[in-house]
Length: 84
Image: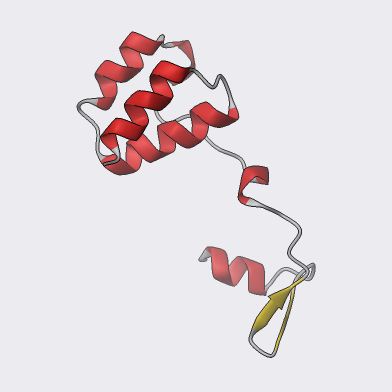
């Protein structure tokens, strides 16, 4: 089921006139999962090295996860670099 279907089927939300109302959850409220197994135990150097071999989607996930958790500047810089 897509996220849109989940929202449509959730009684906390209402769709009227094509407009979704009652949305109280923001993207920052959504859980962000560890980008890969063992990520939390890795240091900045290990993560930046691993990012070099990963795609832009993974780099975006790393950025989101890092901002929500440890917020390490070196990891965020590397993630931003690999998304462009």
